[in-house]
Image (cartoon, rainbow, N blue to C red):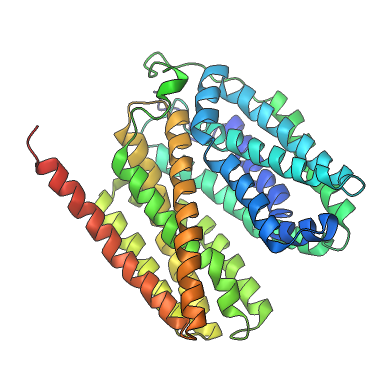
Length: 388
């Protein structure tokens, strides 16, 4: 590894790309349920199946796409991913006349995201020292979160002009594909880990960061998936939208500011801050007013800024595999957490809703934010103490 400049021209260009990719994707993602119903006449059950399949493509395939990127190279993988994005955008565009192509477009964009994410993050930290990683990973996350914040606004402006929406997304993707042609190919480091066979794509897994990442996403997604339903009738829609934008912007601003400190921080300390903020945020949601929801969202934003970054840094430090493979494994962990949130969280939310005690749902999640990380660390200590 080298100790050269942290933000080279190619890395800055890639950060801009990470921002634009999410502007394109998140101008579409929040409105997919409406789109699928309007174009294809799907019921919500069918919509759920299609969106679940897309999520599976994005997350479950990440170790395989990361292993592929390790073989073909990061620059080539980034280029291939943006080509998939471009075809996906074009399929959405044509789907106005041929509705089934809408589903094809969704799957192509999901496949592009599965390939792009580990290659993007690995390219950012390629050839740098461990001390430089926190700033680069946090900058990459910040660029992505700014795109997540801006994308839904672009989509909202174009929601009633779907052809224009998909034309904008396709133009963004195509421009990025051309830009990635100019991105320099990375050089393989002399001390790089050996490339393992595909069957070993999960070997060298950093177990604790994988488990903590899955748990982090499981708890975080309770807020992301169910707060919109809870907020209806409790706060103005415009205020809720502003709160969700504040979450993404807070994450984008806080992570780079805290990056060096988080890099030096012990993992248990980062877990305490991250899960503690999640717990406080969930308790605030139980208050059920616009002010308490806003306080909860901002508190969770700060906690996740610490927790998400430390999870990735701990995974890189705890694995002997390449950064590309590690990021693919971490993306799989996020998929596991998101799936659990959908299954467990959805069932719990429905039960509290039927009992007409929805604030209790957030108190239950808050209790999990305290108990589950403690249990996880306790199990790990017991395993480490066992002889042999």
